[in-house]
Amino acid sequence: MTNAKLEKLDRILKDLHSFIVAFSGGVDSSFLVYRAHSLKKPDMMSVTIKTPYIPQKEIIEATEFARKSGIRHEILDLDFPDDIKSNPVDRCYLCKRTIFTALKAHAMENGFRHVIDGTNADDTGDFRPGIRALKELGIRSPLLEAGLTKNDIREIAHKEGLSIWDKAANACLLTRIPYNTEVKDNILKMIEEAEYMLLEKGCPGVRVRVHGDLARIECLPGFMDKIVNNPEKNHIINDLKKIGFRYVTLDLEGYRTGSSNPENIIL
Image 1 (tube, helix red, strand yellow):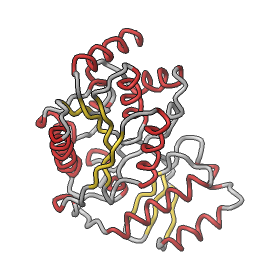
Image 2 (cartoon, rainbow, N blue to C red; image 1 turned 90 degrees about the vertical axis):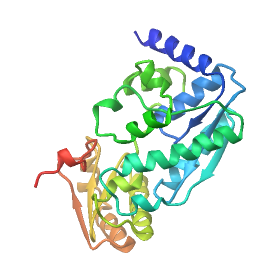
Image 3 (cartoon, rainbow, N blue to C red; image 1 turned 90 degrees about the horizontal axis):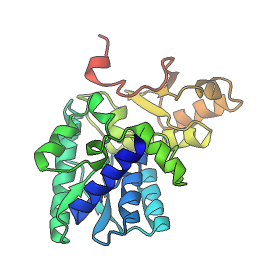
């Protein structure tokens, strides 16, 4: 079944002729740019968006992946859109509309016919208002069209020897802040610094959700003990307080996709 999906993906990419790939550096978009590049397509380019709410680490890793793979890559700087600075419930839609409008303009300026992204078949089952923006703008999602799931993509990437096959999922830093809360640059920097510190302590895929001056830490399954029983636990707490948090809590439910989405909030 996976081979049939992969063959369909290749047909879609070949039929698109020329395109820009919206390249975040995550597993899906990394696999997509790699697959397109492996088809010997000279008429494709990967573009990474840089904004204050996208972790700098993701941009660095995207750049390094493209360099090592010999893939044409550019970084496009965008200002923080005013309409999402209050972190509205439809921020994903507003953000995607802004980002992909810019990518379409960039594609046109550079002679590319399409813009494609790494949305996969699993993404339609989550709260993702951004998909509506992609449809409105005519953005193609080849992984979704081919029926490839996240597990399919990781499996194929592993077989191909891609270093990103087991990379933890990530999302923009706005997802760590409650809806309808003013987003400030210093809060974004605190979140990024805190998550990077925890990653360095051996906790991949961690989320630091911010509630005022409280840090609510969500860990992947199996990693909660790494914080609770970590000999450096007090150092972790002190480091988080030095970053700017007054209180540090560990979410006993751990990391789960969309934990801050409206339907998952119990009032």
